Length: 321
Figure (cartoon, rainbow, N blue to C red):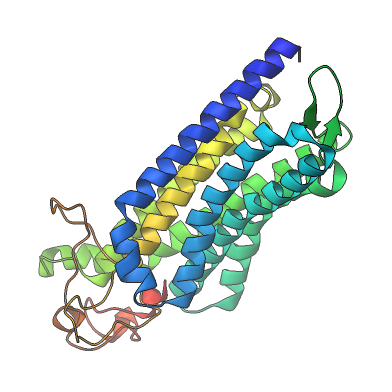
């Protein structure tokens, strides 16, 4: 590309990065009260780790991208250091996505470890192409009229194309596995509960929220896959859509985790919900906070360790995630 095209491409990249960071920080502020109440106060270790990786890992990645762009050309040491750190932080949210999908697949498949491992491996392949430049074409400090910090991908372009062609469809498979499991596990109970219980059952919540959230991430991955596999799109400004895709997916999954963590009694002194129970459902409250119902009242104290077949419209171990 010409110097003008390079400058235009860099400008678009910065616009995407700043826009994504602003959107992510705005969403964090909107949900910070729920995050404090349902994640940090309750001390749910796995949910906390996932939320930090998916939400704050993405924030760190965007900030480091901006730092690398602004300060990378200042010296060779700064260029190398920022490039390595920004690449590492880039894949942290991807790992969080993979663990979350594997966790949900494990719960929805009646704790089938093979299904969970399959979903995790398919999803984690998404991070592989991002790591290749770190080893195959590390960023180098270039001295010239205008100093720069660049990574020459020419030599590894065929490998990157191959990895993108494999990893993007696999990530899509992971999304579809969880989506199909959600539908299969909860469809019958969800349809039945609509005529029996006016309030959302656990199956209803899992079906509605699971389908909505996973469908959104699936659509984002489809768009990104098309952009990555089409050379004309990947080299155009639209190729930087991956930045916004990462932001959207992080927001969607972070909200899903917060919604799931909201399960449990609100009243002080009430028995805490099991730490591995994850579900919720939407309400039209003006506060935009999801409603919480008494687990004892909704499920007659049976808990969430029973299968759907054990009783009508009661929760099963699919609530594990």
